Image 1 (spheres, one colour):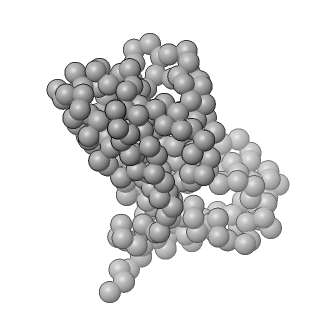
Image 2 (cartoon, rainbow, N blue to C red):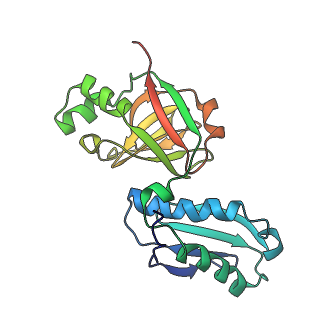
Length: 219
């Protein structure tokens, strides 16, 4: 039996004169991301966006930003978004739609593996097994183009960022920062704990809402 739609509390606010955000709070969790991504996908499939002046849709962990021409009819845009947020399904199964699944081969020889293991009371092989065992959901793309922020990290692997960020993290570095894990698409500064390396050329195909599985390469 299909569950009734659930009204989800949210607030809206402008970022400048060309971006309006819908926020579901400040807590990073799976259900919040699923709700944001549900509306994001529905809007992507809406053929009327261009006629409303909408130029881009940017999901984050807890909010959806709508970028549009400053002279757009923001009231009409607001009504469109409100309809989607107010007609959201109630269950995770209904929110979770079929997504692209990406397999990223990883060489788990990251320089911060001993640190992650020590801070969490685990052995290095345990860290590797736990990190590779999860199936991750891409909650958003950010920081750098094609950098996937992933939900699903084993709680035993939660690790604080480095006290002093590196000036250059190599492209393809698979890393842990707090409760998050992700992949650096290009060489850049960064303070996350590097646990392995993958091929950064695989990242441009990844979209919000997709699924990522890390496949451990033989040592």
